[in-house]
Length: 358
Image 1 (cartoon, rainbow, N blue to C red):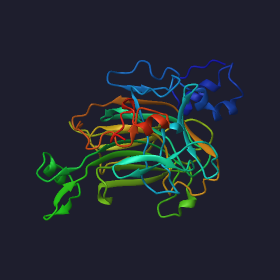
Image 2: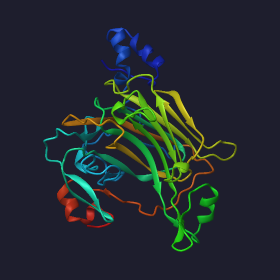
Image 3: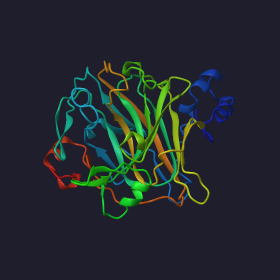
Image 4: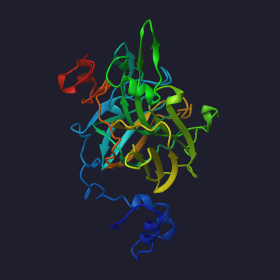
């Protein structure tokens, strides 16, 4: 059956499912988001838009980097993200997360000094891609099918990181904006503007044990720094277990503000407003990351070999608001590579553009 859908709202699905050539009605509604794939999602976009539909045979490294880094919990709970855990097939981006029962050939990564070495066990590894482009205010929409198991975190986020020292341009402005001052008169003072917007799941409710993590709940977060006072973290009830075997549309609309627009981030699930955050709103353009990783709070069992986050597409529509800022990062390509194979990255081939070099 060839179908064409104007959108992925329930109304559009019901319209589709009443067509004479559709499958039995209830089954059609249950699988609506799979039927309404919107294969033309990347056509007819406005100037400045960006769209990734994974239509090639591999990740397009003219637009994306692979993550090759480790952060958060240490081994054996987390062996980092590696390029080998990302692949493309049949118009879908697959982001693997290996569990405790993994028996394959993947090799994990660890942080050593200012760089990364890929010599860890292959269990509890994950995969992600990071955009070449920095995105300002706009609508960020991701169509994803979540893994069936808890354990890995499926996440999409924007990210921009700086370290600015007292006396450098902009330092006083960041302090006035609420950024935390590190240091003292003896060693000097600095701020860390860490501008970030997250969608992450599964998660437990706030204060609940990690092993209660569920896909019924999602974390919607905004950051302007790394201290608790510089972030707004929320846990929201999706109303259903979102790892239901279907694709769902996750979206955030980022308003940096200006000309009467209130700075805020609005989060949507399948077109329905789920949360609005108005505090600690970033205004610096950031790169987009898509993928999986291993915190402690996404479930602790990981009793599987390999599971996958599947991403159908990502689409960005710019707002171009007056408060948008585009500034350089302090460590722009930390833990990133253009190469997928371990041998090239271990050798530090120039084509991989590792930073810092091997």
